[in-house]
Image 1: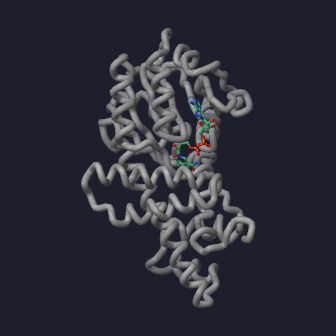
Image 2 (image 1 turned 180 degrees about the vertical axis):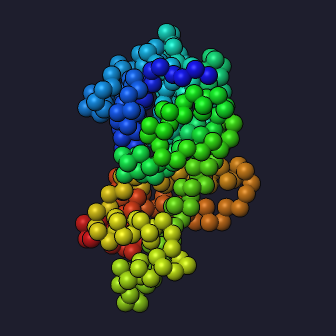
Image 3 (image 1 turned 120 degrees about the horizontal axis):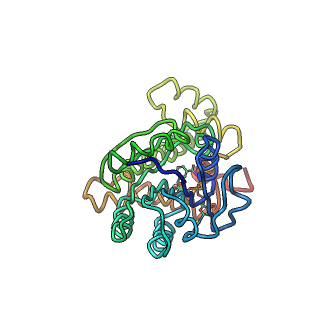
Length: 293
Ligand code: NAD
């Protein structure tokens, strides 16, 4: 596959904005669009599209970084309907789950557009620093043609499979483990504090002991103990990912005991603190409500 000459980017939010900025900085011709307003989210050097149809008429490859599967499918419906479409490939960086990926691949495939999934992980700080991982599922020639594009905004590129949705499955594996580590660490640390243990002491002990995980090595020292709660990933998005994982596990018929428990914990955290950063689950679990912390 020849390299795309112009890239479209839909969804310039917490993750999309720094990824798009790195693509533009690397010198790719970039056209962006965000439904909440493109001009103030557009990185320097990029052009604004008036909408999805306009964007599709001006680029070869479209990248998506959108909040959920319903939004992705609505944008794909607009791409399918676009009359003057030049775009031949859509690469979805959002987390939407394998079922939506398959649906998207079918809808675009019907009009001769290839859908691949390449969900990302590593947070907003990682997106800014170009250290995020990208889990690509799609044909060999597509990853070959887009390698320099991917490397402009991701530090770790994995080709996890050839079928749409396999990147999503990989991403759900990762986020379920991340969600479980943070929720379980919050529960365990709450138990420790009831026994008079200092939070910082527990984090130090666990980080050189066998309970170490991404919550103890990163979220607790950098976002909870500092009181900043600024990972840049909303509780609502993690609750969405855990629910997607649970649904996908149910569809796959694989064990779901911990997934079911995590779904309850994360849905409750989102309901208790709408709009919160996901590291604030500590406040819910430890029963320190927002405003009292
Ligand atoms: P976000 O809500 O900050 O950004 C989404 C953007 O999409 C918003 O700017 C919104 O205005 C825009 N949008 C919504 N509907 C649209 C439409 N119809 N057309 C065009 N633009 C539209 O979300 P985010 O944190 O940037 O996450 C985006 C995706 O990346 C999600 O699927 C999320 O699960 C995933 N993700 C996020 C992180 C993170 O740390 N934030 C990490 C890895 C993956």
